[in-house]
Image (tube, rainbow, N blue to C red; front, side, top):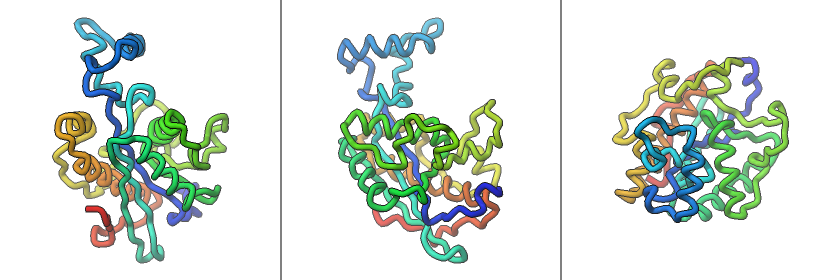
Amino acid sequence: MQYLAQLDLTKVLFLDIETVPMASSFSGLPTAWQQLWEKKAKSMIKEDITASDIFDRAAIYAEFGKIVCIGVGIITGHPSEQKLRLKSFYGDDEKVLLQDFANLLIQHFNTDRCKLCAHNGKEFDYPYIARRMLVHGIKLPFLLDNAGKKPWEIANLDTMELWKFGDFKSFTSLNLLANLFGIPTPKDDIDGSMVADVYYRENDLKRIAVYCNKDVVTLVQLLLKLMNKDIISEEFITNPEF
């Protein structure tokens, strides 16, 4: 892609987020929030389905969900010897993990030479993080402060958008593109639909963080494929936390 020809990969922060509903169940919500969810879910309810039945979908809405993990990846080294370094921000206290993530952006990715990269990031990850930061009173870092900007003024990357080539008819998953491009993906014991159960029933945040970072690796490899570059070998991928 000519659009990516001059991209400095060392200035890109790759990321993926994992979200859960704001409570473990619909019945665990205060009455006011139950009513608000019922209004939100009204258009999604079909015959024999109630707002309570689809409360798991609350995780995808920043008003009704929360972030439990942000996985990030940074490419280092010369183009011929690139390495990928991973890190996770995760925990029960969303404000703390968001502030830690904001600090990373402010300290190392705070200029217009830097970019974020996520899959479906412009529709999900970036606005979700920004909205939850505002809820917690956290000042938005430069790369997330995009309200009011025109689409072409937002430099952050979105691998799903890049793959669409201007076609806005459908969603293409990261897993589908990984298989299409022959990107090796490890067999996981969980997928995105299971994150809420792993969080609320098992309280296993580390398991969620491991899953999240595997998606970050796949994201990095996909962007390299879109740039017609070699993917990074597993031996050059480091995660100091696990």
